[in-house]
Image (cartoon, rainbow, N blue to C red; front, side):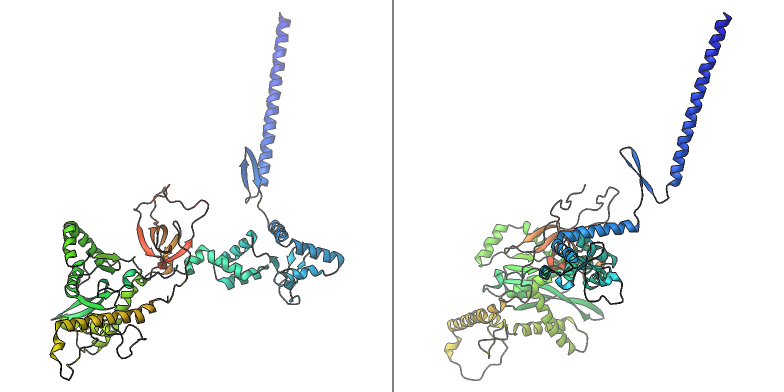
Length: 546
């Protein structure tokens, strides 16, 4: 029994010894592997990173200047081979045969005297080999006119000089050792497409001048189709207080006659009162055109509310008894004074006359003097001739021919008149004859002068929905012009877009990139917009918020 016990003890000791030896080996191996890892981590430079791909750990080694230069050389060689393969083959064959092949004479590079350097890159030979300038400037690399590499070179140097003009950008490219074929036009094209350059120096859009509306080309009674605008203010004296008064200009779109009224302020109520005085003196109108002034918008709103409370059919029937149609207020797009040139130009004429009249008035104006000056200015403007060329030089055609059947207030002429001259029928024939003569002269001397377009004579590319633009503002610097996206375009009868609806950009966003404030929409003419980015043809611009 003792022998068996001793054997068992010896076996257990052996197994324990084996287990301990295995443990020590495993510990030693773990320590060795840990040391190797630490050594590798110590050998990794600080500027190097790691990248894990599919469970494997790769070390990122940044490129150096030599590798960048080799990559640039390889890319340029492949790029030149793509566009100048025949020239490169010809130059290589000439080098082997030590002759000059006449095939190169037909190439576009012949005047540059091209040659291949030691790396196989095509360079400019030129005439300045003996100049004391760097070799890169003496023999620049020839770059094709078109291609992705050309665009990258132009974009890099254009950004490097902070988006300067064509000359500075082209000079920077030449100094860097690149000779782009027809480089001036390439740089100009790139600058024309640069968004930042458009924002800094881009011109506003333009469009062909529209045809005149029908209401300006057809003979009609005076002020049947008219336009309205405010001008001023004028400071008048009322006892010891100084008050502001505004002029209200009504312009006939056909005869170019004017009617002046005075308004106490720029409110909608004051405009309605001036309008009622005008209609009471000149008769009912068919259409009234204006800009988007706040007083006009308010008056139109109040008139709409008042008209909704009236019996429209009854009013229309009553007006038809007098041969009058219901009038309509038509408004232009905001900030489009060029669309109302027929009445905007008259304001300048009235102002020049009023300034001359007020210069003769030494003391401060009062209401009576201002009314007198307005009547004098109205009379002078209505006595002006339509054109400088007239069929009858003694009596040029004027708006007063149709308004009063005479041009000036004349004294009773001398002579003896017959009793038959005062008959009503003869007087009616005389007035009708004068009116017919006015419209005949109007067609011959004035209407044909409207044919020529003084500017905007060519059709331009229409703006499209989702184009990105900035809105020109005369009161703010260019860097503060607001950004917007075209939400809707308004095409006219000729298919051209002259006004658009804009969705304004807003920087007030929450943490998810959504708008905090409601979307703002504005209508503007294309002449107040600078195009930054056209609609993308592939993916487009997101319309809805995420």
